[in-house]
Length: 164
Ligand SMILES: CC(C)(COP(=O)(O)OP(=O)(O)OC[C@H]1O[C@@H](n2cnc3c(N)ncnc32)[C@H](O)[C@@H]1OP(=O)(O)O)[C@@H](O)C(=O)NCCC(=O)NCCS
Image 1 (tube, rainbow, N blue to C red):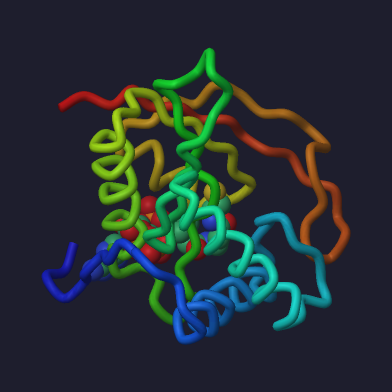
Image 2 (tube, rainbow, N blue to C red; image 1 turned 120 degrees about the vertical axis):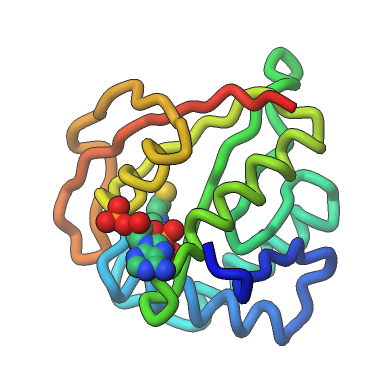
């Protein structure tokens, strides 16, 4: 991981951050990532998403590092968090940003009292990253979601126990 990569926890998500996060989300969806959105991907959809995330973060339900962890869970799963979105702009990929984000997300979840993280992914690039950082692959659910172009896609579930 390069020293130049700094992972910042977004305490407040203002208009500037919403614009930047929307750029990354639009780029990832247009690049074919299966991250909840379909093509055509509009700025309005991206900004509405990040505004709702911002409101949720202000309520203390999630932490946004651009990798996003959902902290609010049912009362019988207080120890669990969901890694909800890991997005790196295509221009910034393959330099260790994803690895740095993932490590920061794990540290952030641990400091919020979480000892178990769960995620699902439809990306081979992401699967290699998770496996490298010690995540356990549970299995694959076929036909789980749609790619941005409408093609059905599977998702793979991963988990990781966190330790101090
Ligand atoms: C998955 C994702 C977050 C990875 O981000 P990233 O910043 O490229 O991740 P990294 O740079 O840490 O690792 C990617 C690769 O670059 C390599 N790499 C890291 N630093 C490097 C460097 N300095 N020089 C050369 N290669 C490097 C890694 O070894 C890794 O190789 P591999 O994929 O062949 O195993 C990114 O591809 C993405 O945003 N995808 C679209 C959205 C998506 O599908 N997200 C997952 C949903 S859960």
